[in-house]
Amino acid sequence: MIYLFLAILAGFFIALSDALNKKYFSSEGFPSMLVARLLGTFPFLFPIFIYLTFFEDTLFYFSLELAFTTSILLILEIIANFLYMKGIQISPLSLSLPFLSFTPVFIILTGYLILEERISSLGVIGIFLIVFGSYTINLPTLKEGFTAPIKAIIKERGSFLLLQVALIYSLTSVLGKKGLLLTDPLWFASFMFSVLGIIITIIVKLLYSINISKLIKNHFKPFLAVGLTHALMCIFQMIALSGIETAYAIALKRSSILFAVMLGYLFFKEKYFLIRISASAIMFLGILFITLTKR
Image 1 (tube, rainbow, N blue to C red):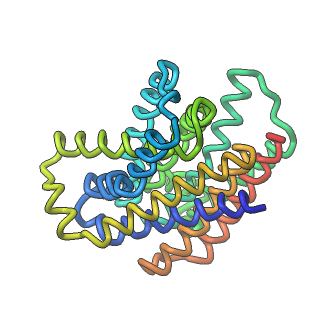
Image 2: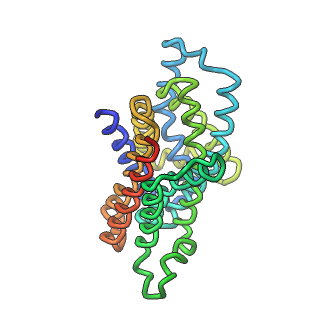
Image 3: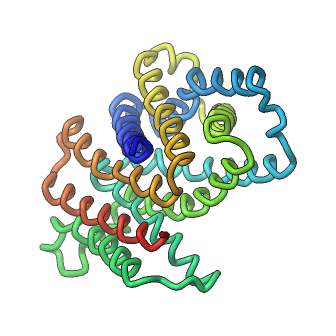
């Protein structure tokens, strides 16, 4: 039972981290949001990595297979994080983050198309609920025509960017699970996100004219708050994965879409709260239906 609760906590902390990031760093631009999200975790996760590596005899985890898996995962995570931060910067949280619910749809569809895995009736219902929820979330545009809510997904750039992130996450979920199997949940989380934070910082420094030290100095407390909440998400998710099946952990973590709508209203007074929380609940229910097919 504790692992189910930790998976939900992971969903809460990723939503809280995104809300804090948008509140304090969106005016600085999405590259600054990237630095806050990923470099911010470094002070919290890197010490864990050092301790586990040098005091718990985990040096044997390093291997060519781990290096290859981590390299591919890092490339995909870098792309996903750029799209993710840009998406929540330019669009309301309650209108963009719910589209992460499409990750299990992409997983089940690619499994069907590539591996010829059968989709159960529950899986079909789950896909329908997620698609229906994505239509419902844009109901305020219905006055422009029956197809307007569908077109709004493309017009609302943040929603479309998070839809692309969901596709990438359908791939990283598989690679991340492999990384865990090759090592240990907590070690892999601290290793993976410490390296990711360093690489993202270097890329942002090279591509954008951002004074990172000044950014951190001027926003020190928000920087630590964003980093801590994101680090807690990583830790709780990895511990949950070690105790329950991946499909259940990720599904419960996607409760973040509900928390995101709530925090979007509390932090930014985003409009159409009842419509968006209802649509997000439908999408989350769809996730749970799909998850049941993984049993």
